[in-house]
Image (cartoon, rainbow, N blue to C red; front, side):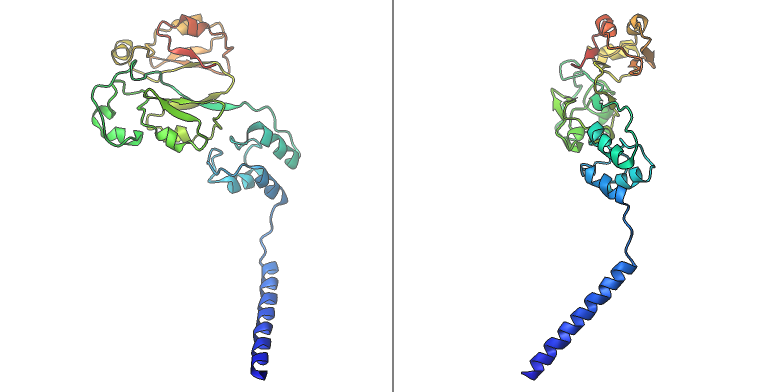
Length: 264
């Protein structure tokens, strides 16, 4: 019996000594935690989407606390989170403009027909390896195989009739769909801007008309009629300057191809 007691005392004593040693070492090598960084991290949504430009929310919180990025760096948290972070940082969040993704294409299965039938891997990333870069005649338009859909963590983008479409109310502007599109068709636009040019083709008018029934032909009618000087044709494609756009809709009403559309 005495042997059991001695063994128990030895094991217990060893445990206490080891615990004491680890406690001392833990305090000695403790990494100091920035209180602001910890509070900022608590406010970030935890999606680790990379929309802020960092690998995850931990890195973003550290950068915000260090003043390396703006208070509103998290696109998912948006203005509500930015205002709370501003209180922690003792500064102002400033004016923030909500952004949303937008797919620059109206070329659905009827408007932009295919030149051959494809039945292979259903992913846009495969298309560059196919003849002519994919089955559609237009070499600029949406391929419709959903790489952007797979990339979106917020169920904000879906393929409808061969073209990806964004639900602006669900979109968090994380930018994952932008990175996933091999044709670079997806851009970020102001959430409250009503008009967009739903085309990305930079071909000349005749070639555009042969590939799509609604594509921009670079006629400059929108440019000539915009009272705010917000629309200009560059490389055969109309482009809206959202800092100048007044949402008047004149460009959309004058466009002969009806490719400048009203989003809401």
